[in-house]
Length: 211
Figure 1 (tube, rainbow, N blue to C red):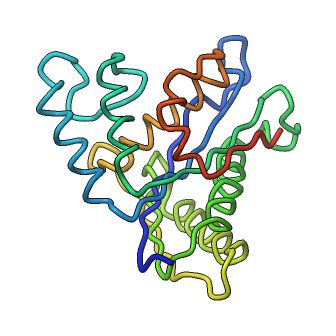
Figure 2: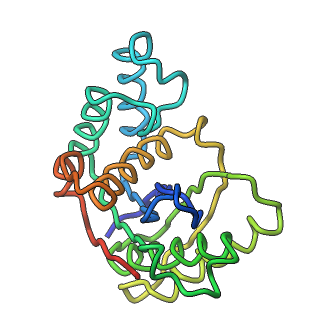
């Protein structure tokens, strides 16, 4: 039982349905009891790679090269962290969700955080979501939905107190690490390349294709 964990949620893939769109969409929920260590990993990566990698002030899986990706993922292995991933193959998504991308995003996010809650015993949980381009009311609805999923699916007797923050990923080391994790899962599903996911397979608490 933890006193407190932070959960960072990020996605990989797109929500389009054109011939140029990705075949899969992934959301991960990365939980850690040591958020300060994620900050330390990102700071070390900045010192080691920023001047030569070109990733700028924010690390992204799609904008990073192999050495940086491996460095960040190896850092996760050394922390008290675990994650759940959920994915959908877009060809199998029901028609009712294809026309509402926000609802589709929230659906996958809600199921993913529900699975994490079922497997995480803590007294308090702080969920951090990339702010994205959402209106205030949409952010509020998402926050309430995530809280409800945690409480409804908690695997222990007493659900944790839950807070939700919407933060620009450039300002959050945890979200940048979550982006790398989501990218590793996506690469395995979309291109059949599990090389990065293998680096962190010991941190997988649960993974599931919802459709």
